[in-house]
Amino acid sequence: MSPTAIITGITGQDGSYLTELLVSKGYVVHGIVRQTGVLTPPRLAHLIREPEIYGSQLFLHYADLNDAMAIRRIVHQVAPDEFYHLAGQSHVGLSFEIPESTCELTAMGTLRILEILRELENPPRMLHASSREIFGTPPYIPQTENTPFDPSTPYGCAKSFATQLVKTYRDAQGLFCCNAICYNHESPRRGENFVTRKITIAAARIAAGLQEKVGLGDLAAARDWGFAGDYVEAMWRMLQQETPSDFVLATGESHSVTDWLDIAFSRAGLRWEDHVETDNSMFRSTDPCMLLGNPQKAESELDWKRTVGFEELVDLMFDADQERVCQELEKTS
Image (cartoon, helix red, strand yellow):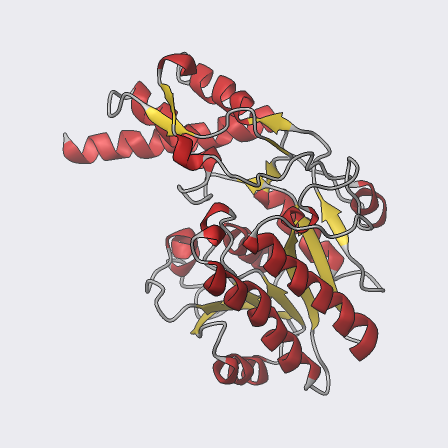
């Protein structure tokens, strides 16, 4: 019998890559989609169009994270072997604008799911997508699974709450549940409100003559950026272990926004200095610093390593956005 998995946040960047991975491994995948979501989520459209997949290996259910009754009904109906909890308000900067809903979805949504799973006679193995934001400004670099929590954003606070809950339910309730402490991970499917996509889209559009300038915040801000497809592979491997544990998923390399600009605009045949304007509204008053993850535990215990390097990742995203821009121009010509 094929293994069965439920994914919250299935329409997001990570959810779509994880769905592809699980389908390729023969899983039957059930995704939980917000009731306000579109009927054909763009990141899943290529799978939904495949009749041998959609309705056979892939099913979508509509429920909000604050609707425990609906989620409980789905869980009882599906009886999954694995549960991947990826959903939540994931934009760090936006969490300052909507702190209450961020905490409701990210923190309390996780608690509801843990309670639902705890009630089951045979609960599934559960993966919670945590974040490097739980560390805030950490006391040392690189960070490991044992680095103390010190969040500096509403999103980081909500994720810290959820991450600690997962540990508590694992230790006190005996659930097989794990935290994937993810550092920044990008792809051509990244939302356009994130700085990485904003840069690659701008480079492609400027090269095509569709815009002249792009406004950005702190160009010196640095992050540990990896490829989302690599990170969902690690998530799956975490649930195949004999013992549940938490893992830092990172590259161990730090790069700045300027590094992104150098590669993307060079790919477009442009100088970013000629097109980037400073937008003071995009600076964060409490921007986390020194965020660099140590993936040693994941590499040794999960036999996991990234497959896409930093420059290759930027190229991948720029090329995808350039193709989209070309398609736009063809439609209007």
